[in-house]
Structure formats: C-alpha cells, structure tokens
Image 1 (cartoon, one colour):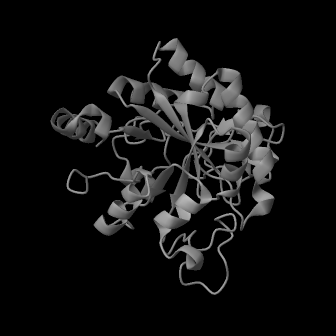
Image 2 (cartoon, rainbow, N blue to C red):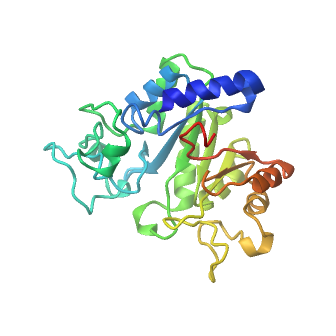
Length: 288
C-alpha cells in the first residue's frame, strides 16, 4: 500500500509542486517491513519517503527507544525463548535498554488482527527495538541528508505509572536530538501536549505538532466532556470553540488530526490561523 500511495502522491506533487506533499513513512514502512525497526526505516528510505514517522519511549536507564506502545506489544514481541508474549507485558519504562534487547520484534503474531491488516509485511527474525540515536545514524549511513523525522513522544496522562514524566521524557528526547545535530530536521509530536510545552519552552527552534483525535478509543480534546481534558496541558475546548484554535493557542505550528475527524471547514480555519496540517492516517487514494 505504501508503494501505491507513494506513486499516487508523486503524481500530485508533479501537478501541484513538490512542496505541497510531505510523504511520511508511518512507523517506518509498516506495511512492508517490521514497524519502528531499523529494517523498516531502511525500507522506507528505499521507497523515498520525505519523513520517517516514529514513536519513542524511555527505558529504566533513560535510553530513548523507538516503540509505539507504552508496553511491549504482544502482537509483535517474542521473548528470548521465541514465544509470543502474553499480557500483561512489561512497560518500556520498567526495562533497561539491555533487558529490552532480549525481545524480538521482527514478526507479527500469526492469526492476529494485526497480521490480517499487514499481510505484505516481511517476516524477520533477530530484529530488536532500536534507539532514536540509531535511527539518526541509519540516515547518516545511507547518506540521506534530506529525510526528516517526525518523532511522537508516547506518554499518557491517564497511565502515569507506565512512563517517565512529561518533563523527563521531553528533555531526554531533546538531548538526543541535539547530540545528533538534528534540530532543523525534526518535528516532535504528541497526543499529550505536556512534553510539547517543554520542547517549546526549552527548544523553540524545534517544530512541534499537536496530535488530536476525537474517537471512541481515544478523545484527547473532550469537547463535550464535563471535566477538562488531561491531554491538552490546560488548553480547554470551551475557551476556544474549535480544535484549530486550541492548537494555535497552545503554540504548536503544526496541527496533526486524525483523517477521520477532519473536514473542509477545519482545514480552512487552520490555514487562516497559519497552521500547517499533517493528517494521519490516510491509506487510500480516495481519502487523499
């Protein structure tokens, strides 16, 4: 699917100007290779994405590692004995980086919904959860000086025990970005806007994207809720009346909404406010 979308967007770029399109590889090349892994990111670079989208967490010994979930995902993680993990699985925060390397994340559990969704994903063995630093190094080794990195900080205000705090996580990510000299090539995003506030305050040169979703499985806006949303760092829907205005008030330069939530009126409003828009996840040409 990624290859088909890439070709489709390349055609749009030719008609509208390449700057209009930012082709992001979601979790690397999730449809083609194991997600959030070095083989997956290498495959995405081969496809020709403009940006590698990835997720990060913090280990017990403060290594910034690339993994989508707060805990090891039992649909993609196997233990040292080769067996699939059984919930409850350990939180990334409860393992050292060395302990984390005992788990293999190169395959999807057969028969799972995950496996049915990504039938073309290559099956691999001996694939480990990488560090953010190693992803930067992969791009350098490939001599790709143009690819950008959209880094999502994985943290939840409703599961505070599962991760480090927002300040600690933001500063660990920031330290890794600065050590690699990648300040101008990254976007830092999160559904939880608290770490973004730290990035904005301590590294204003780094672009930040406010992720938003208003679905049954997660609603970080809480437009009709009686209680204020714990996700938006004190910015309240009732004070602003729209999600784009919330994003503008918070200070993100980029709004990253779910494609299922977006409509034409919101696009017009966001553009009028000077916001860039990165929509997720758009998988079909008709949706594009």
